[in-house]
Image 1: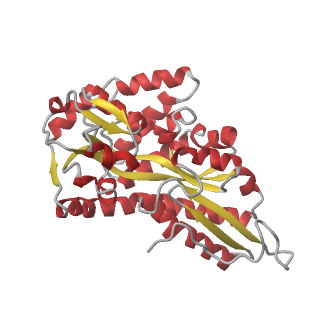
Image 2: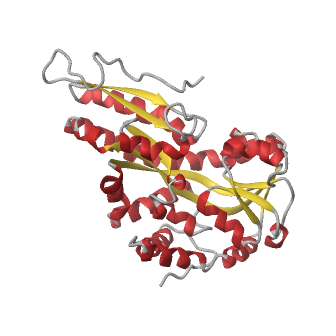
Image 3: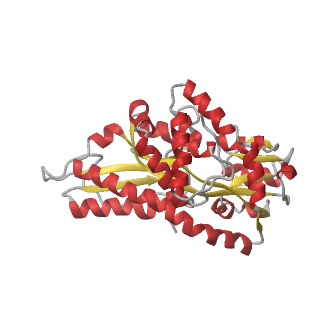
Length: 355
C-alpha cells in the first residue's frame, strides 16, 4: 500500500544542515501535491521521481537528499500549491495550472484548442516544444512566483462520462455537465449548462442530480468509481492536456549544489516524458477496466467531434485576443501549438484560425 508520506533517504541532520564532512551535505526537500497518489502523475512522483533523484544524488555526488512527501492535500490543497512553493511552505510542488486561471492564464493553452491529440506522449512533446520556443512560459514562474519550472505533466485523454446516453451534440443541450476551469467553455459552446466542480464532489453530485456528467479521462472515472453513478462513458476525444507542472522554490534551489540541481532537472525531464508514455499505456487498460465494472463505453463517429469543434471554432481566437491585450503572448503560443501538433501527426477536426 502506497504511503502518502515516505522518507526516501535517511538524512543526518536537520533541514539543509551540513554533515561532519565539510564537502558533503544532506538536504531535506518537502515535495507535495494536492492530488492523491491514485493520480498517475503523483504516483510517478512517488515511484519514479523521488527514488530516482535520491539514488542518483547518492551515487553521483557526496551529498544525500531526503524527500518528505505530502500528497492528497496533506501539505497543500489543490488550489494552493503554487503559493505553497512560492512562500516556501513546501520546497517542490506538482500542480494543475487549471487552479490558477488568474496567475497562469496561458498555461492552459491546450484547453483553448479542444479536440487535440488524444496521445499524452504527443501532448507533452508538443507542450515542451512550445515552452522551449516561448521563454515567457517558464520565465513567469521565476519572475512572479519565486519558483523554477522543472518539468511538464500530461493528463490522459479527456472524454465525457454521463448519467444518460447521448449520440449527438444536440442531445447535450440544456444538460448540466461538470468540468474544471477553462474546459467549461467546451460545454457552454455545445449548449450544455457548465458547472464548476472538483473530483472530490463528483460522485455525490451526480448521485444527487446536481449535475449529470463530467469531462473526465478514464482513470478519473475508475479511481473515483464514477461509473457507479454515471454509467455511460463516451469517447468523444477532447484531447490529452498538458497543463500540470513540477516546480521548486527558487531560493531553495539556489542553495543546492550545482550537481544536485542538475540531477533534479535531469530526472524531471525523464519524469515529464513518463507522464506521456505511462498515461498512453494506461488508457486502453482503463477503458477495459471501465467495461469490466459495468460502464457502457462507446466511441462516437468523427462527425460528432467535427460538429462540436465547429461550435468552438471562434473560442481560440477569443482567448488569444483577450490574453494578448493583457500583455501575454497567447497568439504566438496558440499558433505554435497548432503547428507543433500537426508536425507530430495530429489532424485537427476543425483547423482553428488564429490571426
